[in-house]
Picture 1 (tube, helix red, strand yellow):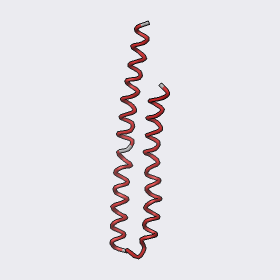
Picture 2 (tube, rainbow, N blue to C red):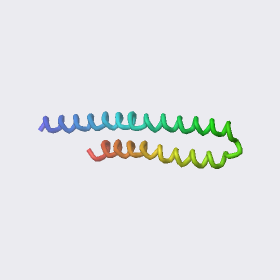
Picture 3 (cartoon, one colour):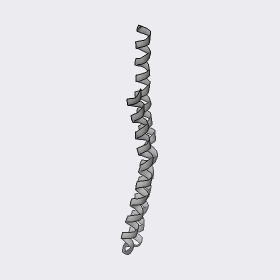
Picture 4 (tube, one colour):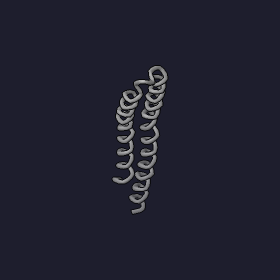
Length: 84
């Protein structure tokens, strides 16, 4: 009986560590992408301030698409934490 309890504890430990890695690496790409998009939007606003509305709307649509992959990483991490 003791072996089963220790095995379950190691599975929980592995799931928690995996969830941490999932969030760490799963949000690294979106963070870099959002910084790149915001930087390019600022450059565009500096070059053409009269088209600020179009640039802002396009930037926000791009940010929403980028953020979707970070939300997927969050869902996988939550599944690892609460299903096991």
